[in-house]
Length: 272
Ligand SMILES: [Fe+2]
Ligand SMILES: [Fe+2]
Image (cartoon, rainbow, N blue to C red; front, side, top):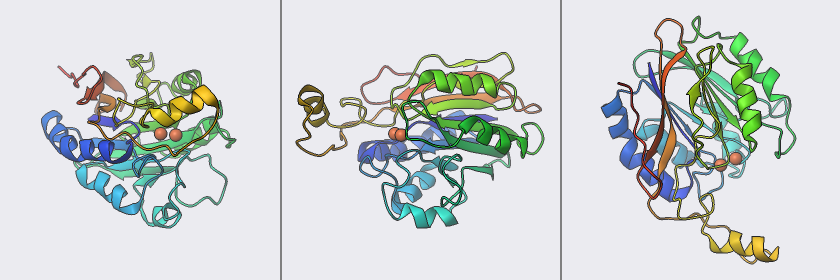
């Protein structure tokens, strides 16, 4: 299988890049399954239902959220009827929506997608390690699941790497989201799990993590909020990671970083 994961979509620039480029990418590289983090897709804050539908229509099989899951009030209601929209699995018991699901892709493969939120430099949440382990135990790779993708949403790269080693041999891909900065540590661990500490964002990099420079810069300089954060609207770079998995085991045999368009250095998926 070929799977594509794209990091946090930020605002209109990110959504437009997804709409314009994703259908072509899916065709060109024959991706069987696509996961997109959408926690900042609606003006940088959460995900409205129309914007969720936009990401799905462009080719996302599953959309994940994160600490911005509830920035748009409507998400609490529409997430309940959307099996392909996930929020962190280790939010409080009784939280709307779900944190893991087994989804059938366009070519009939069954992919378990799990999202968890970390605890280092993040608001308190339940233990992400045991929560993800329980979800995978209920739907093991190579048995019920043809592939397992874990979106680990957190600030600290060490915590994501720990999740990668914790799940090595039990997941196809463990990838970080949330920092909006793509890392170049993508690799395949000894047990066959692909790991990348952060997928990066799908947004305009002529910005501070997707936000127009002036207000965050002035807050760093003065400590005084003087305005709102507004998403940067120049051409977005699509950032993420692509993997190819073994048909029998579901473990990863190839991994490529993905950076397309915008101002970052470019990296196209390479499978051959
Ligand atoms: Fe984000
Ligand atoms: Fe986040």
